[in-house]
Amino acid sequence: METCDTTEQDSPEPPEPSYQVLLANEQATLSIDEAQLIAAVQSVLAESSFKSAYVSVAVVDDQTIHDINRQYLQHDYPTDVLSFVLEDDGKQLQGELVVSADTAARNAVDYGWSAAEELLLYLVHGTLHLVGFRDKQPVDIAAMRQAEVAHMKRLGIAMPDAEDSPR
Image 1 (cartoon, rainbow, N blue to C red):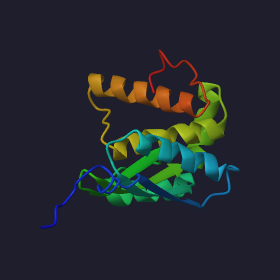
Image 2: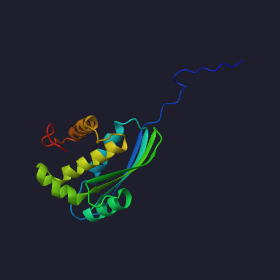
Image 3: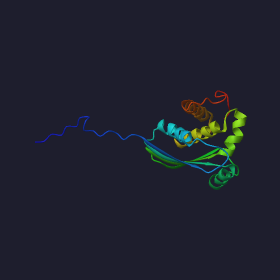
């Protein structure tokens, strides 16, 4: 009679998390560090409950993000970041992020840091939305803000006026 030994050796290892990020630079306003932008998205995904994710990122100009905002959300203005969840089954996430380099360049001056850092914040913020963070209620805004500060810090960037900025 054969016996079946189910020791830990025989148990398959759980698969490593897999986070794929595809970035398309479709603007001419900013010189961007694609590796840093991808790392920012992957950092947020790694802290989430998702075991795998595929996120496409488009860095665009204000006109393009305005058109997308109007077409899909019926908002007739440019914005900083748009997040679209395409699939979320609790284990796997598929999403799209669209960020505006023009808006980042313009807003960075007001916050006293570089446009590249502002753009990075947009990607962190947008990815937090993809993984479930919201920012409509005060308690949600506080949690989002805390997560943004933590992720930017992990990326080696201190946010200007992190404690009292209304962003």
